[in-house]
Image (cartoon, rainbow, N blue to C red):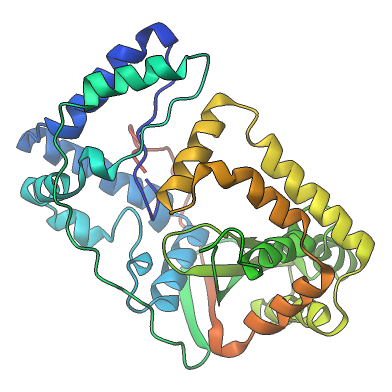
Length: 354
């Protein structure tokens, strides 16, 4: 499950493809929501939320940061939901969601592997063809209002180290060919933290010894609005405020002095190689196709995305650093570490769903 879609996936021998399609088609239309089974499963999800978010300071900080950065857009709500949502979710609520959205005209079927495409099309028509399309709910605009100034929050939670997270509002790809800034932002993230010799590792961790962790994160593909994240943990004896100043200084350096040609070449090579290597497996290829389609980008433009990344210039990287990294577009979250509870043998819940 992601912010934009839910993916069901299987890896099976091609001889079992027809049977797997039959099972998935049945799940799309004939789901049974037994109240007792639902009550059991919701407890598993609640335990997962505790384990993955509430007991993990970095996850908790990220969740709170996102809830403040977005005021109206659904991205402000955690993917797994708030605990109150889970405590009050009823089988009827899940049934309504299922009836509204689980339809063949709201799904993508992706098959990757040693198969003949005509045979796959025939199987898809056989198993999904009988399922009627549904009138989907109207998706109302949920535009985020302009941010009018910097937002700050502090999260107090048991943790070993402080942490700072900075979230800048940023665009995402809407037109693969015409857009420029999202590709330049991808390259900026690579320049800052895309490899071991990138700026954050070289300056903040090794030279200044200001941080034990410092990184940048940005995803140019999403249905909703984008965020460019900077985050890290200060070294012992240093503070979150000092690390925030260090992160800001790195951005300011790009804004004022730009990016060197050799630095851009290396960042480009690392970023594009990562994009290519992640498609080494059949599973990764299928996920890439489905993810692109789910956010409104035709999967056939995947190669064009790489070409656009390759074409990014140093001037474009400097331009996006100047354009988007401003306080009125920034939300900052600090983790104030509290004493850790006695160790109690942490273990994952019996089933993870998200």
